[in-house]
Length: 256
Image (tube, rainbow, N blue to C red; front, side, top):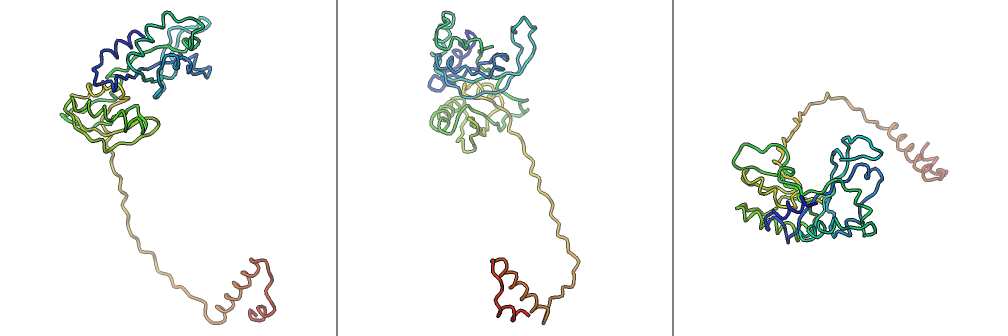
Protein backbone atom coordinates (compact mmCIF):
# COMPACT_ATOMS: atom_id res chain seq x y z
CA UNK A 1 0.00 0.00 0.00
CA UNK A 2 2.76 2.57 0.71
CA UNK A 3 4.11 2.08 -2.82
CA UNK A 4 0.68 2.64 -4.39
CA UNK A 5 0.15 5.79 -2.33
CA UNK A 6 3.52 7.18 -3.41
CA UNK A 7 2.75 6.40 -7.06
CA UNK A 8 -0.59 8.21 -7.15
CA UNK A 9 0.75 11.15 -5.12
CA UNK A 10 3.47 11.57 -7.76
CA UNK A 11 0.89 11.95 -10.55
CA UNK A 12 0.23 15.45 -11.94
CA UNK A 13 -2.95 17.00 -10.57
CA UNK A 14 -4.44 17.19 -14.07
CA UNK A 15 -3.98 13.42 -14.43
CA UNK A 16 -6.33 12.85 -11.48
CA UNK A 17 -9.86 14.08 -12.28
CA UNK A 18 -11.23 15.87 -9.23
CA UNK A 19 -8.22 14.39 -7.36
CA UNK A 20 -9.52 10.85 -7.99
CA UNK A 21 -7.07 8.01 -8.63
CA UNK A 22 -7.31 4.38 -9.73
CA UNK A 23 -5.45 1.62 -7.89
CA UNK A 24 -5.24 -2.11 -8.62
CA UNK A 25 -5.94 -4.69 -5.90
CA UNK A 26 -4.62 -8.15 -6.75
CA UNK A 27 -6.54 -10.89 -4.99
CA UNK A 28 -4.78 -13.87 -3.48
CA UNK A 29 -5.45 -16.90 -5.74
CA UNK A 30 -6.35 -19.13 -2.78
CA UNK A 31 -8.81 -16.58 -1.46
CA UNK A 32 -10.32 -16.31 -4.92
CA UNK A 33 -10.99 -20.06 -4.95
CA UNK A 34 -13.35 -19.58 -2.01
CA UNK A 35 -15.68 -17.53 -4.25
CA UNK A 36 -15.44 -14.61 -1.86
CA UNK A 37 -15.33 -10.90 -2.64
CA UNK A 38 -13.76 -8.32 -0.28
CA UNK A 39 -16.85 -6.12 -0.30
CA UNK A 40 -16.66 -5.19 3.38
CA UNK A 41 -13.02 -4.17 3.03
CA UNK A 42 -13.78 -1.94 0.04
CA UNK A 43 -16.70 -0.33 1.85
CA UNK A 44 -14.62 0.29 4.97
CA UNK A 45 -11.82 1.81 2.90
CA UNK A 46 -14.23 4.07 1.01
CA UNK A 47 -13.13 2.98 -2.48
CA UNK A 48 -15.37 2.24 -5.47
CA UNK A 49 -14.79 -0.77 -7.79
CA UNK A 50 -14.59 0.33 -11.43
CA UNK A 51 -13.43 -2.84 -13.17
CA UNK A 52 -11.43 -6.04 -13.05
CA UNK A 53 -9.28 -8.30 -15.19
CA UNK A 54 -7.65 -11.74 -14.91
CA UNK A 55 -4.03 -11.76 -13.85
CA UNK A 56 -1.34 -14.38 -13.32
CA UNK A 57 0.66 -14.05 -10.11
CA UNK A 58 2.97 -16.07 -7.89
CA UNK A 59 1.79 -15.51 -4.29
CA UNK A 60 4.36 -14.98 -1.57
CA UNK A 61 2.91 -17.77 0.57
CA UNK A 62 0.53 -20.70 0.26
CA UNK A 63 -1.46 -22.54 2.89
CA UNK A 64 -0.25 -25.79 4.47
CA UNK A 65 3.41 -24.82 3.82
CA UNK A 66 3.15 -25.52 0.09
CA UNK A 67 5.60 -23.97 -2.35
CA UNK A 68 4.25 -20.85 -4.09
CA UNK A 69 3.32 -21.44 -7.72
CA UNK A 70 2.01 -19.19 -10.46
CA UNK A 71 -1.78 -19.10 -10.55
CA UNK A 72 -4.60 -17.21 -12.20
CA UNK A 73 -6.35 -14.62 -10.07
CA UNK A 74 -8.26 -11.34 -10.39
CA UNK A 75 -7.08 -7.76 -10.24
CA UNK A 76 -9.75 -5.33 -9.04
CA UNK A 77 -9.53 -1.69 -10.06
CA UNK A 78 -10.87 0.74 -7.48
CA UNK A 79 -11.24 4.52 -7.56
CA UNK A 80 -11.23 7.05 -4.74
CA UNK A 81 -9.79 10.47 -3.87
CA UNK A 82 -6.05 10.34 -3.28
CA UNK A 83 -6.65 11.44 0.31
CA UNK A 84 -8.75 8.30 0.84
CA UNK A 85 -5.86 6.08 -0.20
CA UNK A 86 -3.53 8.00 2.11
CA UNK A 87 -5.91 7.49 5.03
CA UNK A 88 -6.24 3.79 4.20
CA UNK A 89 -2.47 3.43 4.10
CA UNK A 90 -2.16 5.01 7.54
CA UNK A 91 -4.98 2.94 9.04
CA UNK A 92 -3.88 -0.49 7.82
CA UNK A 93 -1.02 -1.08 10.32
CA UNK A 94 -3.32 -0.34 13.27
CA UNK A 95 -6.31 -2.30 11.96
CA UNK A 96 -7.76 -4.62 14.62
CA UNK A 97 -9.37 -8.00 14.05
CA UNK A 98 -12.82 -6.64 14.84
CA UNK A 99 -12.54 -3.64 12.53
CA UNK A 100 -14.91 -3.54 9.53
CA UNK A 101 -13.39 -5.40 6.61
CA UNK A 102 -10.46 -6.77 8.63
CA UNK A 103 -11.36 -10.36 7.74
CA UNK A 104 -10.96 -9.51 4.05
CA UNK A 105 -7.35 -8.39 4.36
CA UNK A 106 -6.14 -11.94 3.71
CA UNK A 107 -7.75 -11.72 0.27
CA UNK A 108 -5.26 -9.10 -0.93
CA UNK A 109 -2.01 -10.26 -2.48
CA UNK A 110 -0.82 -6.86 -3.69
CA UNK A 111 -1.87 -3.21 -3.97
CA UNK A 112 -0.33 -1.04 -6.67
CA UNK A 113 -1.11 1.83 -9.00
CA UNK A 114 -0.86 0.86 -12.70
CA UNK A 115 2.05 2.59 -14.43
CA UNK A 116 2.18 3.94 -17.98
CA UNK A 117 4.19 0.88 -19.04
CA UNK A 118 1.43 -1.37 -17.67
CA UNK A 119 -1.20 0.49 -19.67
CA UNK A 120 0.54 0.72 -23.05
CA UNK A 121 -0.19 -2.47 -24.97
CA UNK A 122 1.96 -3.64 -27.83
CA UNK A 123 4.69 -1.81 -29.68
CA UNK A 124 4.24 1.85 -30.51
CA UNK A 125 4.50 2.72 -34.22
CA UNK A 126 7.64 4.28 -35.71
CA UNK A 127 5.92 7.49 -36.72
CA UNK A 128 5.55 11.03 -35.47
CA UNK A 129 1.78 10.70 -35.02
CA UNK A 130 -0.63 7.80 -34.75
CA UNK A 131 -4.25 6.96 -34.14
CA UNK A 132 -4.62 5.32 -30.74
CA UNK A 133 -7.36 3.33 -29.10
CA UNK A 134 -7.71 4.55 -25.52
CA UNK A 135 -9.71 2.56 -22.97
CA UNK A 136 -11.03 4.39 -19.91
CA UNK A 137 -12.67 3.15 -16.72
CA UNK A 138 -16.05 4.77 -17.37
CA UNK A 139 -19.67 3.89 -18.03
CA UNK A 140 -21.83 6.16 -20.23
CA UNK A 141 -23.02 8.36 -17.35
CA UNK A 142 -19.67 8.82 -15.59
CA UNK A 143 -17.86 9.04 -18.91
CA UNK A 144 -19.87 11.82 -20.51
CA UNK A 145 -20.43 13.85 -17.35
CA UNK A 146 -17.19 13.35 -15.44
CA UNK A 147 -14.28 11.47 -17.03
CA UNK A 148 -14.27 12.80 -20.60
CA UNK A 149 -14.40 16.52 -19.69
CA UNK A 150 -11.38 16.06 -17.39
CA UNK A 151 -9.59 13.91 -19.97
CA UNK A 152 -10.16 16.59 -22.62
CA UNK A 153 -8.60 19.22 -20.34
CA UNK A 154 -5.68 16.91 -19.61
CA UNK A 155 -5.04 16.32 -23.31
CA UNK A 156 -5.29 20.04 -24.03
CA UNK A 157 -2.53 20.65 -21.47
CA UNK A 158 -0.37 18.33 -23.61
CA UNK A 159 -1.31 20.18 -26.79
CA UNK A 160 -3.68 17.48 -28.06
CA UNK A 161 -7.07 18.65 -29.28
CA UNK A 162 -9.90 16.15 -29.73
CA UNK A 163 -13.70 15.98 -29.70
CA UNK A 164 -14.21 12.30 -28.72
CA UNK A 165 -16.80 11.86 -31.47
CA UNK A 166 -15.67 8.30 -32.11
CA UNK A 167 -16.29 6.40 -28.91
CA UNK A 168 -18.47 3.66 -27.48
CA UNK A 169 -19.14 2.11 -24.09
CA UNK A 170 -19.14 -1.57 -23.16
CA UNK A 171 -18.72 -3.47 -19.90
CA UNK A 172 -18.03 -0.41 -17.77
CA UNK A 173 -15.33 0.81 -20.17
CA UNK A 174 -15.14 3.65 -22.68
CA UNK A 175 -13.32 2.96 -25.95
CA UNK A 176 -12.33 6.03 -27.93
CA UNK A 177 -10.21 6.97 -30.91
CA UNK A 178 -7.44 9.49 -30.33
CA UNK A 179 -4.99 10.96 -32.81
CA UNK A 180 -1.86 12.19 -31.04
CA UNK A 181 1.94 12.38 -31.29
CA UNK A 182 3.55 9.03 -30.54
CA UNK A 183 6.07 10.58 -28.14
CA UNK A 184 3.17 11.68 -25.90
CA UNK A 185 1.85 8.14 -25.40
CA UNK A 186 3.54 7.74 -22.01
CA UNK A 187 2.15 11.03 -20.74
CA UNK A 188 -1.35 10.27 -22.02
CA UNK A 189 -1.25 6.93 -20.20
CA UNK A 190 -0.49 8.68 -16.90
CA UNK A 191 -4.11 9.87 -16.79
CA UNK A 192 -5.22 7.70 -13.90
CA UNK A 193 -8.53 6.59 -15.43
CA UNK A 194 -6.81 5.19 -18.54
CA UNK A 195 -7.08 1.40 -18.49
CA UNK A 196 -5.14 0.73 -21.70
CA UNK A 197 -3.64 2.48 -24.72
CA UNK A 198 -2.53 0.95 -27.98
CA UNK A 199 -2.24 1.74 -31.66
CA UNK A 200 -5.65 1.53 -33.29
CA UNK A 201 -5.91 -1.84 -35.09
CA UNK A 202 -5.90 -1.50 -38.85
CA UNK A 203 -8.93 -3.29 -40.20
CA UNK A 204 -8.84 -4.65 -43.73
CA UNK A 205 -12.21 -4.57 -45.45
CA UNK A 206 -12.92 -7.83 -47.20
CA UNK A 207 -15.23 -7.25 -50.11
CA UNK A 208 -16.32 -10.53 -51.72
CA UNK A 209 -16.46 -10.57 -55.48
CA UNK A 210 -19.96 -11.30 -56.73
CA UNK A 211 -20.21 -12.82 -60.17
CA UNK A 212 -23.47 -13.15 -62.06
CA UNK A 213 -23.87 -16.49 -63.76
CA UNK A 214 -26.58 -17.26 -66.29
CA UNK A 215 -28.66 -20.33 -65.51
CA UNK A 216 -29.54 -22.66 -68.35
CA UNK A 217 -33.06 -21.99 -69.54
CA UNK A 218 -35.72 -24.65 -69.12
CA UNK A 219 -39.02 -24.91 -70.90
CA UNK A 220 -41.91 -24.54 -68.46
CA UNK A 221 -45.26 -26.08 -69.41
CA UNK A 222 -48.26 -24.62 -67.58
CA UNK A 223 -51.45 -26.67 -67.11
CA UNK A 224 -54.34 -25.61 -69.30
CA UNK A 225 -57.92 -26.57 -69.82
CA UNK A 226 -59.16 -29.56 -67.85
CA UNK A 227 -55.87 -30.06 -65.97
CA UNK A 228 -55.93 -26.49 -64.66
CA UNK A 229 -59.60 -26.80 -63.67
CA UNK A 230 -58.91 -29.98 -61.68
CA UNK A 231 -56.00 -28.33 -59.90
CA UNK A 232 -58.27 -25.48 -58.80
CA UNK A 233 -60.84 -27.96 -57.52
CA UNK A 234 -58.21 -29.84 -55.54
CA UNK A 235 -56.93 -26.68 -53.85
CA UNK A 236 -60.46 -25.61 -52.93
CA UNK A 237 -61.23 -29.00 -51.38
CA UNK A 238 -57.97 -28.95 -49.45
CA UNK A 239 -58.87 -25.50 -48.11
CA UNK A 240 -62.19 -26.75 -46.76
CA UNK A 241 -60.54 -29.70 -45.02
CA UNK A 242 -57.93 -27.43 -43.39
CA UNK A 243 -60.76 -25.26 -42.05
CA UNK A 244 -62.24 -28.32 -40.34
CA UNK A 245 -65.36 -28.77 -42.48
CA UNK A 246 -66.45 -31.06 -45.26
CA UNK A 247 -67.18 -29.73 -48.74
CA UNK A 248 -70.86 -29.11 -49.39
CA UNK A 249 -72.86 -31.14 -51.89
CA UNK A 250 -72.85 -28.23 -54.32
CA UNK A 251 -69.08 -27.90 -53.98
CA UNK A 252 -68.62 -31.64 -54.56
CA UNK A 253 -70.69 -31.41 -57.70
CA UNK A 254 -68.79 -28.37 -58.88
CA UNK A 255 -65.41 -30.02 -58.28
CA UNK A 256 -66.25 -33.24 -60.10
